[in-house]
Length: 121
Image 1: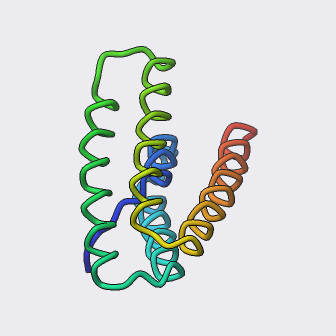
Image 2: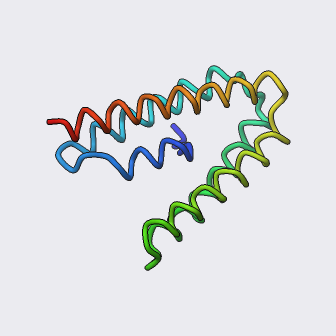
């Protein structure tokens, strides 16, 4: 099975509790796969989607491992997200991109809730 790492879920992986990282990675992977299935990508789109993800994953790792302060890293991540969204907008049809945007909104809400739960305990 190919591992496709979705950018927004990577951000969640950075905030994952060190107590149980394997579980969270598996949960993130399952969420990604479900999202990709819901987009109904054709074979060509799937290949291009994977290429976009790989390219942005490399850039993400570079930012993550840099010596920049958190604010600067956050700004770079925001720019990287926008760049990725522009590429996906060209790849996906209008309906797929709309579904992708809805997924991002839902995922962001889930991440915030999980963050609050971890830090309230």
